[in-house]
Image (tube, rainbow, N blue to C red; front, side, top):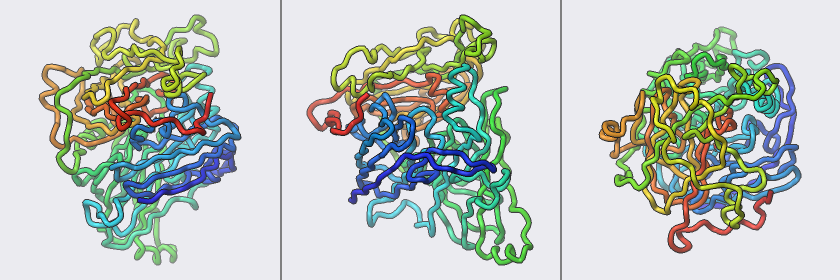
Length: 546
Ligand code: C2O
């Protein structure tokens, strides 16, 4: 195994998109940031130099960080932020993970432009579980705001209203030629007739789940979230923020140019969303000559599902299975039931500029009616490790305080979650099941839930209210997919299982960043087990202090 050394300088740089130049937070002047190419078993040492004007942290999304929460990155959870002018070096090792992950800023909305791929190849000499593709391409799907994203966030937090939607979706930072001033830079994927390539698709968008398709082509899904899956062919994929999907693509169509396209899958009824389409171009090499002669017309656009096509989205997600049989914990020690959804907090002065949510309220979000509040004077992990009291409590409710018809009309009294920095304690090695139940408070919505520090099994999902006496009988314990991010199902539920074998404090949250900021989050405190091999390692000397 190798150790890879990198320096990531966080700095503002002029970036031109949609005809305008924006001072954009970048890494080493690049947007999107540099790609990390590693092998399973390798180590990474990444020195982050903060030359920007904002506090920042970086998160290595999906890396398990076994016993090493210090390298995980969520600001005020596992570390205090890296101040402007300061540095911090993230050190971690990839243990038994292969596929596509990514990295992104984990403070406020900086991840809108601070992100990049983390591609994990098999160990030297060990092959993929499919025939080796001729080429590999990473496609980072993103969202571009024609404004400083930190200002968009600031305005939303001040007014209590929903944040402005983005102005473009992007593929590797480029909107593509359906947008103004974007044609020349459109991402192009060259392909030889007959060859097969691997596409590593990442949804790094801030707030939007996406449909993705390639005109006239099928894709074969072979992995998600750094785990292999049973190959299956599909014309369209749905991908939530935080998720990754690896597909094989074979050039089996007449030589031509074909659009690769992504646009919104939007389940929140009546909520405004960015309904534009981003494109890249799949270019058959044998078709290029005729293009030069000016004979080619526009590439063909793929047919993407309707924005609210939940049937297609859920059928795709439910079709994903682990490549081989897996070991799902069967006897459950912790049976958790988490409601996930939005809320609306009443204002004392409903007409004030700070109460611009529906009917003079402020938007909020919660799990089990607790709206997660990030600490500001210390990180959870540092406070826990040093025994600093008063930063958090460990009374997060394992079930909702009030049972109700989650997908029916909900009593207004339940619309207002209670703020708190509450953790839920797990014994080392305990077998955990969590059912995430979407609520119809404000709207039904698919919430892509991400758990830090773990890869969990998605054992079941459905619509309506989870039924604890009949639904578990249908759970898949044979080949459920291993993931780090899974949608709750709009107006439905999803069930996951994992063994709490990674001690530390681990954030669980909706990967739609507006929801995260409104409090759709909580944290687990996984206690140390017996001896050093089951305990959190000591913090590095350069860990930022608050
Ligand atoms: Cu990809 Cu807590 O995030």
